[in-house]
Length: 205
Image (cartoon, rainbow, N blue to C red; front, top):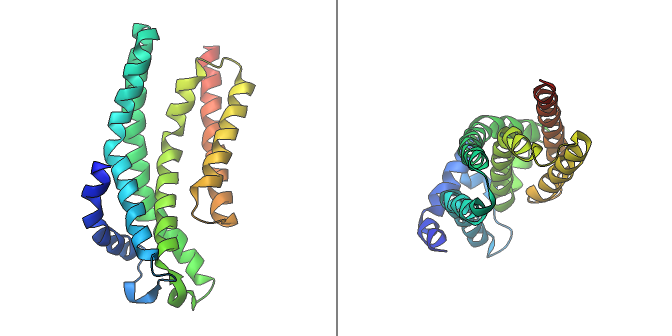
């Protein structure tokens, strides 16, 4: 809550920066309700607060579980949290700066007039969702490797990961978007299957 309060005054600048990333101007955007822009600023403040405070979440999970972990498991957990965070941040930045503009360009080309009626709220939320999806996508192998030791059956592991992917993709977009959901679902499945392939080779060795 403290980080949300700190982030809120800067949320307007964040909105402007995000709009510029996809090569649009605020004058081309529309607000369809009196509270839409305020809700957007609160949403961005919440996302920013979560990104800033998530190391504290890791610390809480580690402190809660370390009593029942062996030394090797503790090291694996620390490495997984650290490497997963680094991969997530790298993927999020790549998704925000490169993949999002590319995807928005494709969507806007479908209708030359769509830029005059784009919702600021939905456009920014979609942009943030693409960025977060990209971060989860790059950190997915670490998650699979982390839980693989506790689910020795590969088929069971695959089933759980598929369920997780479907939940993330279904709930991650601000509104139903078949194109975005299908695109990231394909990417998630490819990354998962490649990771499972290497995991199988490692287990056999």
